Length: 341
Image 1 (cartoon, rainbow, N blue to C red):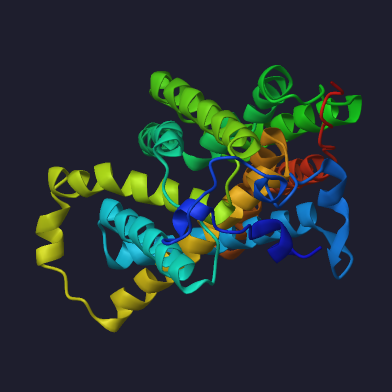
Image 2 (image 1 turned 30 degrees about the horizontal axis):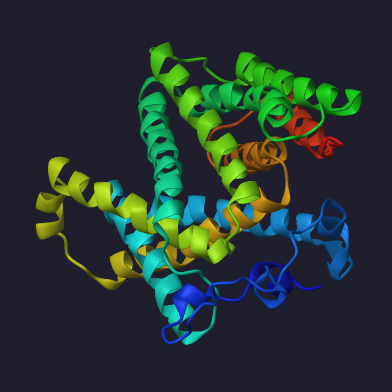
């Protein structure tokens, strides 16, 4: 089995003109690809690594790269909503054109699936908006600390809503140590700052809903990950296009000089944005909602470690120790298996 075998499913018959569907389903019309089983995700498929490990590495690489490129792109073009619109549009066009050319597989748009993905977009945009508001009232380190508590909540959501078993003792200890390490870092090496707890609670609600609902969609709505990328990016683009003039970014765009130093990082951010969207859905499909969140937290903590070591913000030995404790705790987490039915 290869990653392509897992990812690419045949285009639905409704997506190709000139192919009439039989009114009576036959065995040949049943899904040609069996759902990915839990044990299949750990079978070696490349250099001895299983799909779950490769998906984590793929997502981590995209996440860290996206963070750096976005900083440069927004520095050159200080219109974050416009940058996000360009990234969403690029992903949508890429999937549509590549699907037409036969490079990727994405099902034709269906109204029933479209309605379900509207809630995905609400969670996605709500999380982004609340994230921005939280960072206006709290520093990054404080935000990461609160985010480090989300796996504890999501592990219960995995149990009650997504059919997973409760975490093992080792995993519970891993989650508690992860949270404790984040709190310890803030206490010894950073200024704890938060002015508006209601924005934090709003972010918590949106983030939890988004993580759980998207995982539910991946488990229950049968479609390729490229189709999920297309649905999410295309739907989210619509309200954001109206937000650009409302936020006054069109005035800045009219005064912008589109030179190489601006276009190149913007182009790279759009390219990595496509990979980021695809890697996120691949990882969500492959692992539990809790493990997906832990990977995201570790990516951000490692980014903080790199910033501390490179830039002029010097951490104390105690601060670095607590950050490394967080990374170690995350690596000891064991994904909960599905409950036996």
